[in-house]
Image: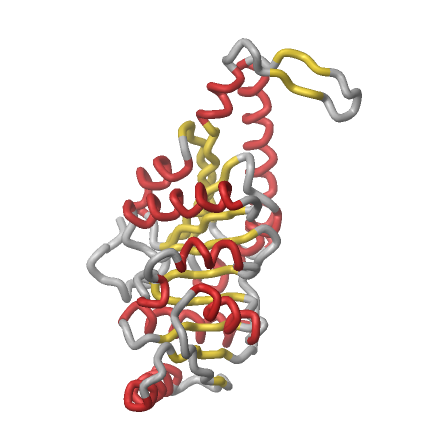
Length: 283
């Protein structure tokens, strides 16, 4: 069981939350590569969306076949068979990727809503990975609400994977001096060393004394590694400024504290709108 009081505990079990709308090969590759780097077990939770099953039970539900352009009534048994087939494909994909990367893995199917099902197994998890595909503001608002629900129910790091994103360099860290941001920097250093890459450390302050302290702390956290690091200043803490800094660094993976002051207000939701790389929010 996860130790929720020790935020420096190693990541030994990663939960990849999947549903029919979000899972992709890139998500499997990203979560499995992270598990391989951290020598962690990967557990995939495939959630059969209860709302789809409720929709299929409605008398006016219809499906259109793309191959024939014909329309017929959508029935609950049809949806259940489709969900089982999707879960079977997801499990087969995970097996292939995990075997190739020599990662211990398991697969579980549950019925309900992703956030609620993830919360039920969160106590046995050290990191949760969520996938999403972007889209309209309404969809992003729904994702932000789902993410907040997951974060309230689990005191562990959260990995957000936009469609096509992976755990890859350049690694960019927002460092604000908090223990969680120090954990983010240590994780970034571990990932960067595995990729023979450097790190970019965004110092979250504009006050010279604070900047000097943050730089000294970051140097100390990176001591003993052979990593090269850049230390640009994140002069503003709004979503647009953070997105610009991430783009300027050509980030492949963003790491930062989940409770960072940079994520105050609506920045987390706005970040989802701008995000094109993987983002790991540490605790």
